[in-house]
Length: 155
Ligand code: ADP
Image (cartoon, rainbow, N blue to C red; front, side, top):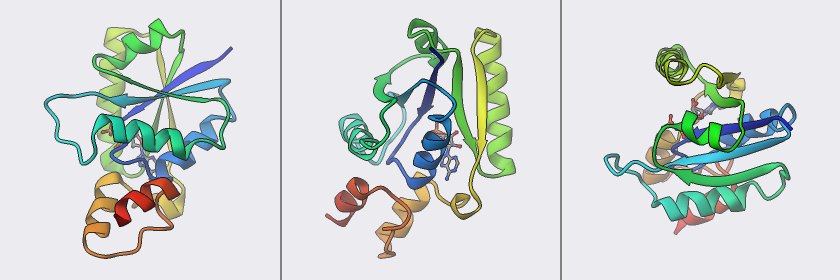
């Protein structure tokens, strides 16, 4: 069984994340979405909300689990028999960050490899922070986020 971990902040989950997830779910038998717990970082949504929104948004994809973890993702992956970490790339700026992350992960444990998916053309501008900025300024983000996120943002 091929297991991958898809780590991130998911603050909140967007259609960009979902697109990567759907594509990756065709390659791996099981994907664990791992929500970052970082007491030093400010998030728009609580950990509980971020996890709950993902759970509601991935109901249609059956080989996906959701979990949260404080610590190194590679440690979590190893403990859960995952062989790969999934990440997405939207721009060259993502590449720089992801390349460093991959190198750091490799330093910790080279048996866990990273797999990258290119953002779809219509999703390259979608990020959690862009969604929050647009929503805050009254732009309708219906086409950019899953329904549970949209409903919460409207409140
Ligand atoms: P982090 O804070 O760890 O970067 P994010 O939730 O912002 O967490 O992103 C998690 C992963 O999903 C990252 O690899 C990011 O590049 C990728 N990602 C986010 N939005 C998109 C998108 N629209 N298309 C492709 N990949 C994306």
